[in-house]
Length: 108
Image 1 (cartoon, rainbow, N blue to C red):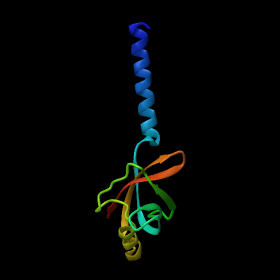
Image 2: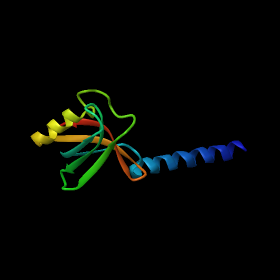
Image 3: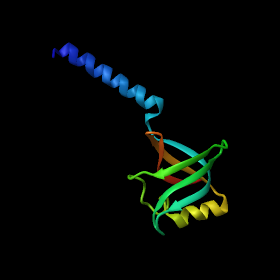
Image 4: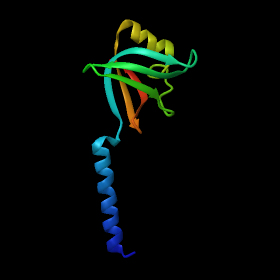
């Protein structure tokens, strides 16, 4: 392949990557109140439901690479405490194949 063709290919790939990121390919966040937490044990959350500030109800699964930090991680007791107190939280997540995968949870 000629250098000119390689340059055009590189520019095209960079443009496609930019468009993919600009159209939602990156991580997102949503704030609201936790309604429900489903855990497989005392230390592991499988999924949770969030009532977003705009009224939308969203269900998140926990991403395999989610934060393990106790302060911002996904632990059933911690999350149920937020739910019982109706405290606002922010969930940082990405979407893969229509599934919302939570990465990190922060207190508002």
